[in-house]
Length: 187
Image (cartoon, rainbow, N blue to C red; front, side, top):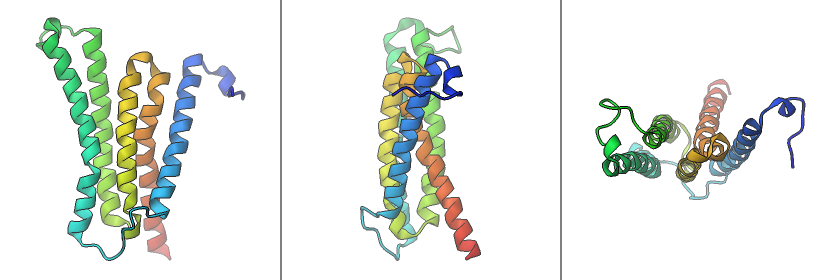
């Protein structure tokens, strides 16, 4: 189904591919955030101690941490097995492959920093019966990072779904926190 509006007809083929990935990622993210927030699939209940919330946060950080480890490992493996890149870019100009792996690592690190904050805020601000969301978006993060890594060399369209599955759950979660705090403050 082609996207055909005045805006999309001016977009390049690559931009349309990115748009498809972003829209799909946003829809999946929205569905998971709504489900995780409201359905409470893991049946958390009040009251919860700070230690219990910290454990939920820690469990939620396992898959994002694994994603970061994978990204670092891919760069390290490439550098070790490629003599021209083993010293890193501070000594010599790096190969195209090393540069791309480094770009994936940089993006993964940026996304990791965001989820560290978002999961922490969610774990300590939201009511207990909303805690299932952390586990669900952690899984989305991991899937998104794998898709991003696999699609990176194929171009922006191929990696856009992976990017959106890591970025938009965080955006939506922060939005939900702000709405909750606003509601709690003014009602």
